[in-house]
Structure formats: structure tokens, C-alpha cells
Length: 91
Image (cartoon, rainbow, N blue to C red; front, side):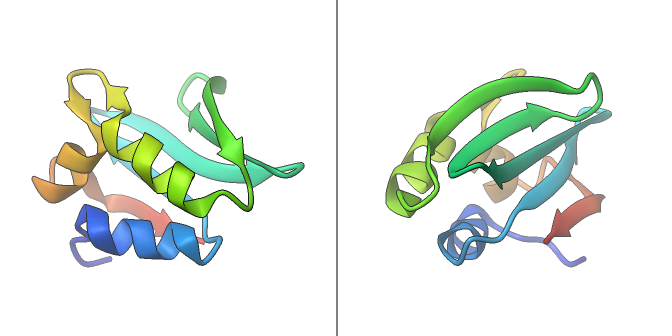
């Protein structure tokens, strides 16, 4: 998949789409299940954060923008293209 900046990622999330991506040799996902959005570390199969209720799409986007993984905010990871484009999936 081509490079996706955070604003484009946010638009996918606003439509209810889930995201899988790689960063620093680890796999992550932003998924929804049972009416909530979650950030997961798929490498270790660990729930990192319950973000918000499914219908709160603007809350989802604003919280993800400032959520830090390892050393960068998710917005910075996507805007600087620090993620592994080979593992980006929009479901």
C-alpha cells in the first residue's frame, strides 16, 4: 500500500475501518469489537489501550493523534512515514 499520512488514516477510522501497521519491527492494530475501539500490540497479543466507544469517531482520532508508541505519537509515526508500509492494512 502507498504511504498514508495521519489525516488519511483518520478519515478511514471515521468510516469505521480498522488499521493494522508495523512500527520498529512490531505489529499493531486499531480495531473495534463489542462497541469499543482498541489499540493492540499484535506481536505480543496485548491490549494496549481501550480508546473509546465505537460511535465516538472524533474522540478516536484525537486520542490516537497523541497516543505514543515507543517514542513517537501515532500522528508523528504516520506523518513522518516511520511505519513499515509493507505491513499497513486498512480493513
